Amino acid sequence: MAGLSLLNTCIKVVHDRIRDLHSSLTTEFARRYLPRLDLVDQCINTNSVVYWVNGSGFQVLSELYSSISEDQYVVVGDLPYPYINESPVFFLLQVLARSLARNGYVVLTDSVSINLGSRNVLLLGYPHTGKSTITALAVSRGFKVYSTENTVVKVENGGLEIVAGTRVLVYDPRIRDLFRVRVESTSRTKHGYEVLDLELLNSDLKYPAVVDEVYLIYTSFNSRGFSGQPVKGRKVDKTIWYFATSLLKGLDYYSPRPLDTPIDEPVLRTLKQLLALFREKYNDKFHEVFGSPIEVFEGLIKS
Image (cartoon, rainbow, N blue to C red; front, side, top):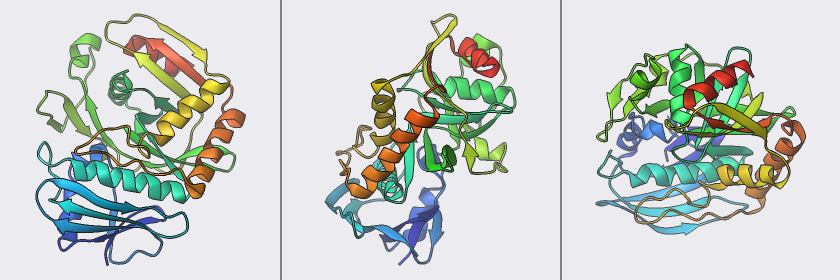
């Protein structure tokens, strides 16, 4: 049976059109949310099995979770397609997030990671707080971007390592006039946002990359200035827990309903390692920042 593989994690998929499924996951739309997955003839380390029955739309018929064996899902539906049948992408993202967590990795949602020359910064931000705008500004200055939207990290060697992530950027084209910058695009969404496939700009990024600083972003086009303050105490745990478990707990809606996967022992062990690392390693390197996207971006460069 073929599988979808990332790092040492594999999702076995029983589907009579597995190559068509994999092809649909390599589209620009799917890669906005899913890291690039390899199609393998056989899973060496199987964490999940998806039994996929052809049909219309998409629905999860059953799910069976295990902390010592493979998770199993039975779904019925068509292949993913932008604007028509998007739910399979988000379902597989949830399955991938749980499978990775069982192997020591965390998928941080609503996150981007950027190399600012001598430093790698991880930006976290609730929806529509300016992460994509700041990322587009970084691209306009020639900085390299490790991930957009979803970042796969691992606690390793006393630090947080970026090991994979999505690399398709969706941004508001108004930034060209507002901030007088030039940013390329490879396509446009039906709602008018620009899309840039970063793999076409720099496909030679080297992973893993160690995170030097972490920022929680609050920006808007109507804001002015730049200010920041450290994230301390219980707020560290609450914030990181949110971004680390949003995919696992189905906080990002898709039709007919997202999964609510369990935080069982192997997943909890990974999350505890992440929280402990933030308390110990990043206690003075984790800040929340406020203001205008361009001024916050300039502030990050100078920090």
